[in-house]
Image 1 (cartoon, rainbow, N blue to C red):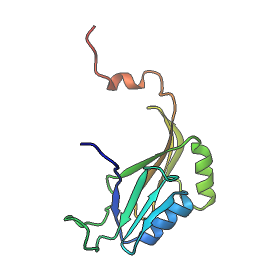
Image 2 (image 1 turned 180 degrees about the vertical axis):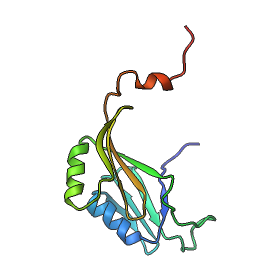
Image 3 (image 1 turned 30 degrees about the horizontal axis):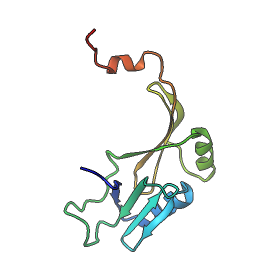
Image 4 (image 1 turned 90 degrees about the vertical axis):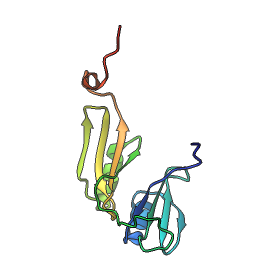
Length: 140
């Protein structure tokens, strides 16, 4: 399959809150908005996320609202600490971090108004030997 794009759609009744959070708080651009959907992008890139009302007729089968489980959106940035400070100053609750993780990320976590975990990361060197236990042994 050759893709021309890919983005998650979060089913939620909180479209206005998600729009404000992702555009005003996180600084994403509004790509498209209607009464039933909001699509945002990071600086006009193909890094998109959409929020859709579960009651719209265009919703495919499985109209469940997002249940706040199992979805983690990772946003990679150059300065995790500056973003954490900026978001904290805007009243966003930092739920984890910022912290250096042994697998090689500096990160913090927040939640958006729909309950989506947002993982803000910068790649760093992993702790020495961390990945050895997760890498399959290779024959000599």
